[in-house]
Image (tube, rainbow, N blue to C red):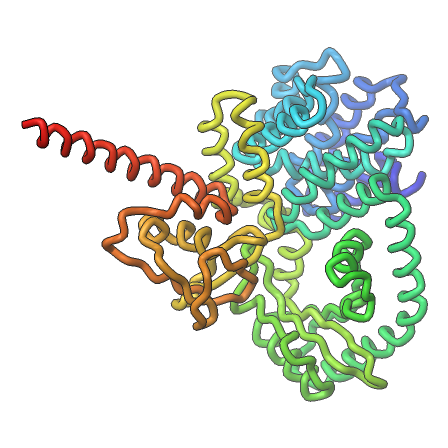
Length: 499
């Protein structure tokens, strides 16, 4: 069997290796139930249907999620494909497993819309699933990844629809959850079907660069290992990381195709035991090689909004070669790879629930506000910006981090701090320089909002450049109340004049 079609025995071996005293009997019972439910069924690839749930469960086990999630992965299609009921699953495997299977099943049902309506309905269902139990989304990621890997079996129109949905919905959600590994796989899997010529071009570029730089990077890794071995550090890892193809495609577009401006085609990761050793390793690199000005980023002291932590530096090595390094602890590395899922990773037979992040809670609130599909469609573009655009993080003068979508302006920043700060905003300083309120913000900017307590409310023209749903809603609300108040005062004046 290939990587795409794992056997049950391979799954069981992985579970025995990954988990301490796992309940193998229940895992086997789940496989037997799934095998009976899918008996005789064949996928469009020509492989038995059972290969899909086993592949999904294998991926969930690789992620180190609690065994209940792995078992639910094996069973995730049985209600849809057989006479099995949720009640029966609950009796055999418990409430938690049955609830996960039922939630995944609901995500698949009632998608009878086409075009933008289908897109909106899928998005709505994903939001609701995340708000109720984020583990359901981990299962959907594993399910979607295997579907992308076997997409060659689908007709062309379905290939494009599934790939676009994966790129525009699933990958950005994985990014917001900090799951960079999953996000990268979803993007590359979709990229191959949506822009096959560009995909092949990026693949050729990377193949050439890996051949050109591979031996050199190996020598650099050897040098780093020798440097670190002379210190008090004992438990460290050094390895290379190759840039993902869709990420390379986006960056090349950003730099008008200039490959020489992309320094992280092959980056080197250094994983150490604790934060102190991270900074020690950074110091060693800078003693040994000259760093590029402006390329040192401390995401340990100031983590990214999705929780990512690491030290980044880019240095000139021998012969003028430029190499990027990422330095982090093992815990930071797990969080960078698995994001929110890292909090659910198996720890000696237990798992700890993760608190919904603020943006997920906001999505749940959006669901309550939207009463019809028409309203949902009207909000779709704004939600794409709020939820799915790349994120930036900017600072207040006190050093607080404000998480905003790429392209956000000081108005979005002001309303993110507080409604009254937004309503009373009159001017802004960005990095201690006065700027216009429609200035685009960038990660690392220090933003100071200047307010006037006598200001009656926001300028309606702000709607032209406010990007976030939150800011636009507050401007609209405040403008409505201001106009209403002005109208009331006019009527009151007229009444006085009559008297």
